[in-house]
Image 1 (cartoon, rainbow, N blue to C red):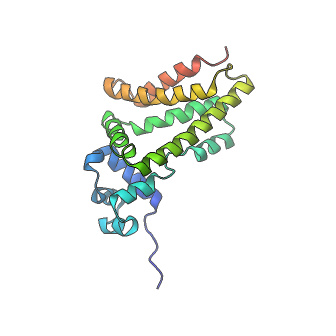
Image 2 (cartoon, rainbow, N blue to C red):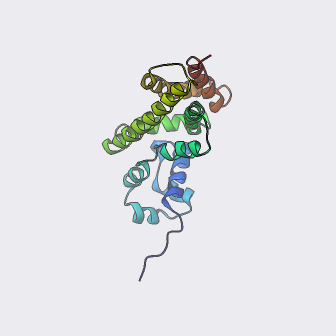
Image 3 (cartoon, rainbow, N blue to C red):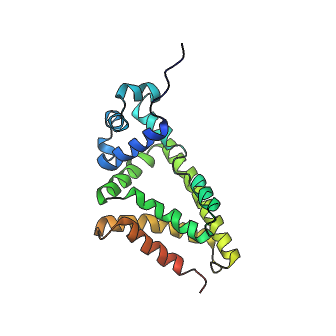
Length: 195
C-alpha cells in the first residue's frame, strides 16, 4: 500500500506559516493556526513534521537564500545595480503593515536568534545573500555603473539600511513600507553611483 499523495506541499505550508506569523506573531503561533491557514488538520502537520519546532526548522532551512531570485533576474538581463536594488526592496514584503513588521522582528529575536539551528540557517542564508550582493556590486564597479567602492562594506551597509529602514517605518508609519525602504536604499546607492 503506497502513502496517499500530499494535497498541500511544503512550499504552500511555508506560505501559510509566514502569513500566520505575520498576523499573530511568534507568541500566538500554533500548529492549529498554521494548519487552518494551509487548509490542513493539525494532525497532518504533526504527522509530517512532528512538532511546531521541527516544522519551523524544516521550513527555515534555505528559506532566505536569494540565489534563485538573483538567477531569475540575471536571466531577464537586468543590470547588476538594478538587481541589487530589487533584492533589497524585497525585504519590504516582511512589512506590509506595521503589525506584520513587529511580528517579523519579534520572530527574528525570539525564534531565529535564540534557536541555535535557526541561527545557523540565518547565518548561512545571510552569508550567501551578502556574497550575491557583493558580487553584483563588483560587476557594477567593473562595468562603470558604480564608482569604485569597498563592495563588501557597501553590502553590509545595504543590509543594515534595510533593517533600520523597516524598523523606522514601523515607528513613523508614514506611507507604504516599500516606498520608505526604496527612498533609503536609493539614497545609499545614489551616493555610490558614478555621475
